[in-house]
Picture 1 (cartoon, rainbow, N blue to C red):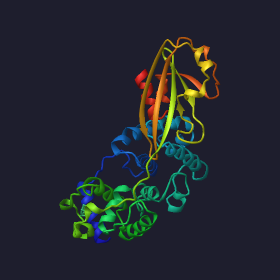
Picture 2 (cartoon, rainbow, N blue to C red):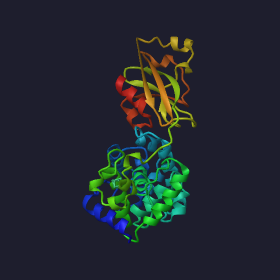
Picture 3 (tube, protein in one colour):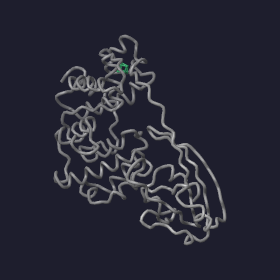
Picture 4 (cartoon, rainbow, N blue to C red):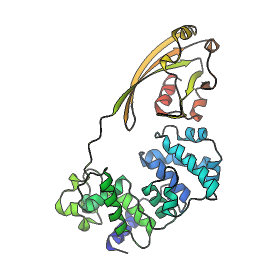
Length: 338
Ligand code: SF4
C-alpha cells in the first residue's frame, strides 16, 4: 500500500462517515445510492434511498415492477433519466446476470446509467475490490493534490485524473480508501476554505505547498441556461385534478404534468364554467434550462363537461397523486391548491 492511501485510510478510520444507510457490502445498495447521489445532496437522498430499498429490497423486485412505479418513487428527486436507467438496468440484470451486478468494470459500464465512477464505486464499496471513484469531491481533492489547474469539467482533465487516481489506488482496504477520499472532499477539502491544517495529506498536496488551494478547481464557464415558457392549466374539482401524461421525449418523459393552456380550445374551456379562477407564476431551474411557469387555476363543478382523451388524461385525487410519477414543480402546485 502506498503512503498516500495509508494516510487516507487511517484518517477515514477515525474521522470518516460510517453510518450512511448504503454503507454495506451490498453492490445493489451501493448502485442505487450512487445514482441517487449524482446531482443530489446526501441529506436529501437518505429518505428516498430508505423508501426505495424498503419497496424494492432486491434487484429481482425492482426488475418486476413497472416504470411508472419507479418514477413515482423517484418523484421529487429530479433528473428522471436516472430512474429510467435504473429500471432498464434492473431488467437487463434479471435477464442476463441472474439478478446480480457483475464485478467487472467493462460489464458494469455496459449497463444503462453506469459510467466509470459509478462502476468504480460499485466495485470498491460494494464488492470491496479495486475501483476508482471520481465524483465531484474526489476530483477536487485529486486536482489540488496534483496542483492541476486544468478546468475540472474538461475531457482531457478527466482523463488525466483517471490515470492519477489509478496510480494512487491501494492494494487492499479498497472500500475504506474510496470512502475516505470522498469524505475528505466532503468534510475537509471543501470547495471553499479547505481545512488544510486538519488534512492527513497536506504534505503531499501541491496546492497546499504552493498556497493555491483557492485557485483549484477551475471550471469552464457554464453556458447561460435556455429559457422556456410553460403555461399550464390546473383544472380542479373539489378533490380531483386533471393530469396529463407527458410525451416520451423532452423533459419529464412519461411523467404526469398539467395540461398546457392551449391544449384545449377556448370553446371547450368555456363549457366548463369555472366557479373560481386563480393565477400564479414562478421559475423552476433544470440543469440546462430555466422554466418560466405560469399556472391558470380553474375550479369547476362538473368535470364531465370537459371531454378528454382518456389515453393521455386522467382525473386524479390530489391525495393519490403522491403515488404517481410527478415532477417537483407540479407537486408543489398540487400541494398549494390542495
Ligand atoms: S491540503 Fe488542503 S487543499 Fe490539499 S487536499 Fe488537503 S485539504 Fe485539500
